[in-house]
Each structure stands twice: as C-alpha cells, then as structure tokens.
Image 1 (cartoon, helix red, strand yellow):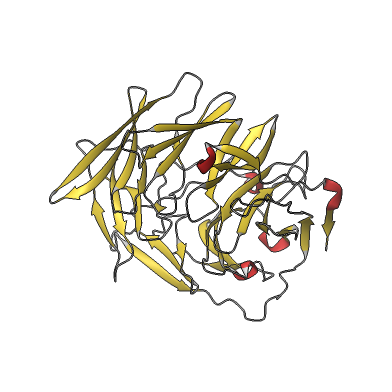
Image 2 (tube, rainbow, N blue to C red; image 1 turned 90 degrees about the vertical axis):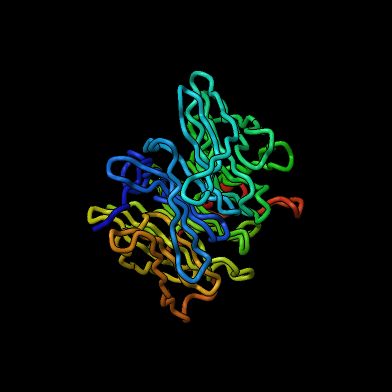
Length: 387
C-alpha cells in the first residue's frame, strides 16, 4: 500500500497534457543529493520529514512541530541537514529551520514576509547549489519580488523586484548566482536570467519567436544542457525541446518527446558530462490516464525508454549520479523510506552528432562576458525548420 504518492500542493495547468503546468514534486532534494524533505502523512494530518540519502542506506527523521502542518506548507532541505519550512498564519508567511533534538524537534525562526494585497503567496525556489541559502518568489500584479528567506542572519531579505509575473526557477551555475525564471509580460512568457550577484539584474535567455511562449524547465550546470518547453514549432501546442547554453546550434524539439495524451516533465539530468551534453541522461515524469511513470532519454538517442516507477514513488523526485544511476525515492507502508536505484540501459550506438528527426529553432549565441550565461538568442519563426 502506498503511504505517500500524494502531493498536497501539486498543480497542473488546464490547457491539456502538452501545455500542462509543471507539477510539483512530492519531495525536494538538495542539489548535491545528500538530503531530501517532504510533508509526510499522519492520518489526516501532515508533518515535515527529512531523508538522509548519502549514507549506505537512506533513513528518515520525522520533524513534527507543536501542531500538524497545513497541506500547503512548503519544506526544503538545507545542506547542513536542517529543513526549511514555510507556513502561513494570519496572512503572514513564516519561515523557520527545523532540526532534530533527541526526542523532539528544534525550531529556529527566521522571520516573516507580509505580502501586499494583490500579491500571490511566495513560493520557494528549487534548492540552491551549495544548500546554504534559500529563495522565494512572490508574484504581484505587475512585478515579482525575489526574496532570500534563509542564509541571512537578519531574516528574510528583499533582493529584487523583477518586472512581469515570474514562475518556475532553474539554477544555471554551481555558485547559485544565476537564476532562470519564466517571465510573463504583454501576454507572452519568456525565460530570463536574474543575476543575484548584480542586484537582480535581468537579461534575456529564451526568445525563440516573437509570439511564442518559451519556458526553461531544467538545466545542468556541468554540460550546459537545458530542457525547455515552447510552442514556437507548433503554435498553440507546447513541446519539449533541448539546447546548450552558449552553443550556436539550434534548440531542437525531438518527436520522441511528444507522447499523446500524456504530460511529460523532465525532473533530473545526469551531471558530470562536461563536453558531451547530448549524452546526458534525462529523467522524465510521465503522467497519463494510467498514472505516473518514468521515462529516460538522452538527446543523442531517438527514443524514450519507459520504466515502471517503484511503488510509492514520490512522483517527480529523483537524482542521477555522474555514472548514470537513476535514484528514485519512494515510501510505502513496508518501506517508509526507500530509494530505488536504476541502471539505465542506454545504447552505445546513439547518434554521435546529436541530430534526430524533429523540429528545430535556429539560435545564435551572442557574445557575452564569460562569467554570465550566454543567452540562447532570438530566432525568428521563419528559421524554424524540419529535418
């Protein structure tokens, strides 16, 4: 019996499978893969739980507070093993760090954010590389506030006000300085880069066509591989594509990533492939009428390999090792803290030049300072071609 395949704060878009919003994973994992955190069920209530993943066997530590958590409470693991928790009380957004103290739970309050009228509740960004800080976005009517909510002794700190309504959040470097978000302005959504080292300076990242919605879903800082979703090749129907930061090659939209009547979301990329981004393994969450399962794919190959998810998979959560092992956390009544380790049988005779049938959007990377991610550039729709 599955104890937690439940996602208390999951959300999907309402535009059909191909245009579905990115579902939230059932647990968060640090960028280095050492810790995870989730809301665990206790009857009809919830409590934070930390998983340790970097030992011989995974184990869980419950971190219940003085009262049960609300289903919308956000939790995020930190690099030192503490768990960041985001609660809402009396209209204020409270942040604290939880840690085990013998038989109980210690709690270090970090402060609160009060959002003005018309501003959506702040949402935690994915765990930052290094795990010493944490950030959140609060979307207002015309701009989005970027907050640092952990890692500053003075409490939550407002870092920048980004014009437009921002969503998503992908880290582009190992230092946790370059953040990519999807910004909606003028009825169109484009991925942009926010430079935390320059006071939140914003620069373009994805502008495939003037009238397309171009979102970034995932990035690997080692190889520069990025996974995107755009309706540029098929107006009105968002498709998955891939590209490489700084490359002059086009973003490509493989046909094999179009799965009828399914929502496909990349959730993990194999690290360590410095010079061969096309050989990075990519793990996909596939949601269909029969439930959720795992797809694995490499840009160099022409097909997606479908794998049954372990019973109780914390859907959308997982990590790759540099050696190619896919690790999927799961929880069942018999195994309340488990990790399935899958060795993916990728073919060795894949397409060595990374090409495959599908649609591509021609991109040219402009010159940029070496310390900044190179935008994938602005390509007119007329340059879309089919190979």
